Amino acid sequence: VPDEWHLPVIKKLLEDKATKILVEKPICVPSQIKAMEDLLNRFSKIQICVNETYASSEVVKIVKEKSKEYSIVQPAILIERSKNRMEDIVRGRFIDKELGVFALEVPHSLTAVAATGDKRLPFKIQEVSLEDMKLPSGKILPRQGKGKISYLTEDGCQVKILTAMNGEVLHPLSEINAPSSIPFGDKTRYRILVLEEGEYKIIGQFEPIPNWPRFLGRVLVYRRGALLEAIKTEDKPMNRQLERAVQYFKGKEVNPGSPKEALSLVKFLGKVIERL
Image (cartoon, one colour):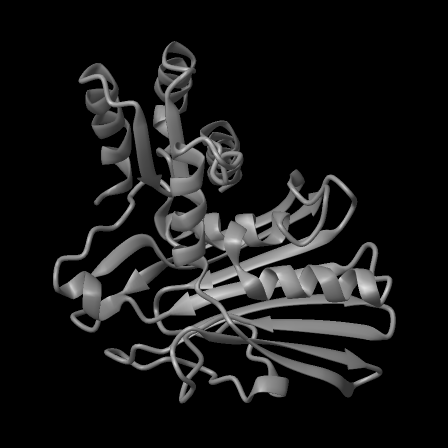
């Protein structure tokens, strides 16, 4: 469903007396922030949960635990979520013309980074870049190719978010034999999270990992370049997030996808786009 449809669908559901709503990320696009804010205030007692999948990732949970174990307090953080989406687009898959390539994987990346620490929400934007996509036919799609966002978190961590939908791998890790590119039609997903501070480097690799069973991720811990730990873990963040959403709707858990928090991420992305 195109991102700009979320607002009118939520509005219709609320006006039809719906009491429990689950919505995919992003909750809306930047041009709809005021309307969404007004809607959430108007229906503040209705249970709305945003499917911010990576808030429930086991890989992210282990990365956070290992950071504490090895006293990693203010790491440099890099996260990349890239693939070759051109075949899907040629077949008619929707594109977000407002946020461009940032609409697809960056909300997941922001959520994952925020979950690695207690004060990891974005605080100050430093650098932004966004490039077009050139399809095999030669057609140019503005803002759909690749992008980078650098920012500081509330606790002073330097974060770099990378994403490419044109088949490029922007930060290939030698530790996991990462590919340098993903060919047209190839279903490979490159999804990594890296925290570095002092002697330590922690790498989280999200599923699907090439040639591995589905729903299996891993965390690698290095000290001075030597591997200390290699942890494999079942990681079904979407399943877990949906389970938590159901428990929230039943009144048994706090909201795992607060719409106001989700809206704050859209506001951040809106400021990012303004920097271009």
